[in-house]
Image (cartoon, rainbow, N blue to C red; front, side, top):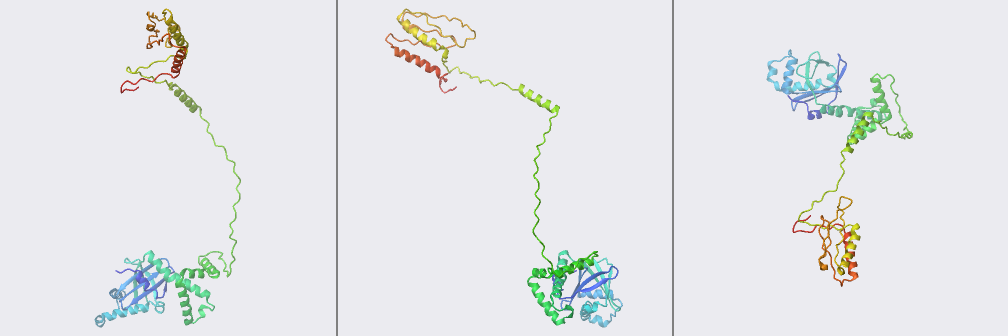
Length: 397
């Protein structure tokens, strides 16, 4: 079975629309028929202006359909011998039947069928024919309605409203010239043609009133020949008053939430651990020498003077240096060593935790400047603070 395609639709541009009405539903149907004795086939297109149906018949299908619809027809031996020429005559007869003059005398009736989407019969007193049509796809059906019905009607509307004389009073030759001229213009610029036709106030308002009357609008609009351009300046929006910003809403804390918050702060305060200075671990191999505090400077200075004085006099016990590490208020008296007979053997005793410092001895020839230099050296050493650990081999503090 062959289905209707765009190539078949293009063959229908030179064919006229036939109109038949279903008397049961008062629905008008538009038909277009094409037949060719060269290709030995024929096909039909039918539409209710909403959907499109069609059927294609070959020469053999035409012969079978003819016998099915006209069983009482004379099929003598002479016709069977001339089957090919008879089939061509059948196609020519169908073409005459589907013409403006032939379709006017035919009866149109929709029939039920299990083999097609839309079936209908065309008959008169001596002949009957049935079409079994199938629905055409939406794209092809829209193309058929647009190119073969809607656009030609727009061009005819332009011809009827732009012609000086009435179209009905024109002769066939004059009407053909006008139609050819408008068709050539519309073919070059389709958009401009449609715009110029439907933008005319008379045409637009006539179509509007026809639409309103056809669809039972109570008060159909009037037809006007001229229109005035409205004022297209947009209105300015009203100035909105400034809204005072409202303060943000604060949600009051519930008593239970406040108690939980205070309890959480109390727990955090309890868990705070005071930070203590890190303890330095002294290596056994590294030796640090503690410097005396500033409070011990007078004692050290006095010690130096006594040592110098004792060099000229008889040896006497050296004063002891108080230690700052003593835990009690009164430090325990330390036993002092008595100096030997020579001044160089005298030494000052130191507290047990501290390392013993060798006593600095000087001869009687030392000058007063050397003693002052020694005292200033002790002061500068005390201001530097604690000495850094002494390197012992590869190990570092």
